[in-house]
Amino acid sequence: MHEFLQQVFSGLAAGAIYASVALALVMIYRSTDLVNFAQGEMAMFSTYIAWTLVNAGLPFWAAFALTLVASFIGGMLIERVVIRPVENAPVLAAVIVTIGLLLIFNSLAGWLYSYTVQDFPSPFPDRPLLHSLLTTRDLGVIAVTLIMLVLLFLFFRFTSTGLAMRAAAQNPASARLCGIPVGRMLAIGWGLAAAIGATAGIMVAPVLFLDPNMMGGVLLYAFAGALLGGITSPVGAVVGGLIVGVTENLVGTYLIASQLKLTVALALIILVLVFRPNGLFGTAIVRRV
Amino acid sequence: MASILELRAVKAFYGQSEVVHGIDVAVEEGGMTVLLGANGAGKTTTLRAICGMIRTEGEILFAGKRLHRRATEDIAGIGVAHVPEGRGTFIGLTVEENLRLGGYTRQRNTQANMQRMFGYFPILAERRQQQGGALSGGEQQMLAIARALMMEPRLLVLDEPSFGLAPRVVDDIFKIIARIQKQERVSVLLVEQNANLALELADHAYLLETGYVVASGSAKTLADDPQIRRAYLGY
Image (cartoon, rainbow over all chains, first blue to last red; front, side):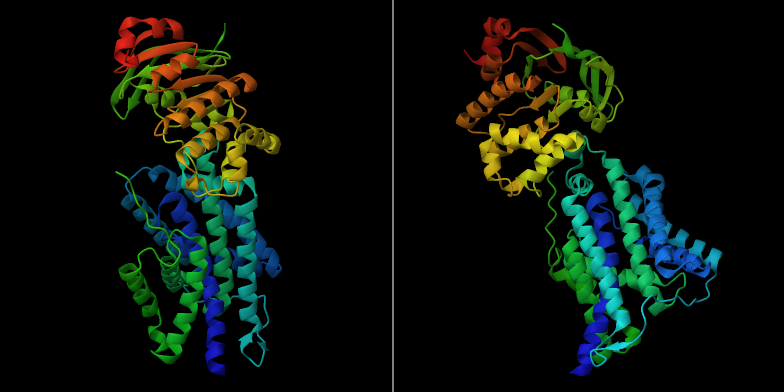
């Protein structure tokens, strides 16, 4: 029982990371109808920025904050420069662009920082808590994710920019008629998604170690989480991410070799698509013709 | 009287095809002008052209400013409030959020404006926490008009406010529109299939056929024209 609970808690810590990336995916999907395959690599690149800043001698949290700002700006620029031109192109063209971005960020990181695996500092000490049910590090990761989620919720619920972003995602034509600059809202959405991804990357890097391929597996788990929650639902993305984290950890401990854990994500994706395509919280997408 | 809106030889396009072929339309400051015509005459297209939603040629002047090639959101920002075909309700957001969105460009006055809207449409106050999609058709039309007025517009553009509504509800809506026009001192450009009702309310009218203006004048003149009466008013 003790081991089981231990695995649940460390699954929640991993799940918090997947939940963050899943949330970033859902935000972009809702506003641009586009699955951003580069989300993981963008997060990886942000993590390298943080790593550079920490190595330059900045305190961890200062590097963290600066990285979020840089990622936000970077995300906005990507939307403006690369995504905007294919906004009205067929979906496949836009998907190819995000896959291109994935490759570019991966190679760029490899070229700038080499493919050598790097140590990444954790801001949290690694001490056991509650009869070693969980570690302070797990708790720290979960806490940071929760704080981020609460801040995002408050932003979307109570600020006029947050409301305008929801309106622009839901009904862009009508939002424009209200005087809302929809293009700017989309750019802010990409910026936020990049910053959320950066948080996930920085939180996961001490565990996975930093290298250009660090986020590959995370992205797959995040996809599974986003699909499980219903690709249109932010709450669903978070719940889905957490469920995937716990499931993956338990299955890896009790059922299959932990090297095969990634298949859990694939199996989940297929199961969701076959049996419940709208996920747990999603709404069916009906297009009128 | 001065015109708040003037269209001069305006052509409008969907993709490559020209749908409106060089029309002249004017809306007087403080007045109500109606565009009449059958389905496919180009009424909705003309409204879309004004708000920069489609490609246009020719000159569109609003309060002396050229609207040509301006973004839709900028046109909304300078005082043109467009209630589109289908009402444009944000169905997943609450009534109150819908109204706040209407006030996006006038955030300082949002609270006061919202209270004023609840005065015109008490039903919206009752339903302020409900989702827009949960409202009836008539209530959604009221919400759409209120959302547009939250922008403190100088010109209110209404695309078939009667569409899909029961006759009694239509009467109510048009009464409120007439009242709002006086109290808010806003000019109105109206597209309406229900020509009888529209000509009663409006002071100027244009009749569109397949992308051309085929008749125009005071609402009274058009209502008395025997040919128009036979074709559009049914008596």
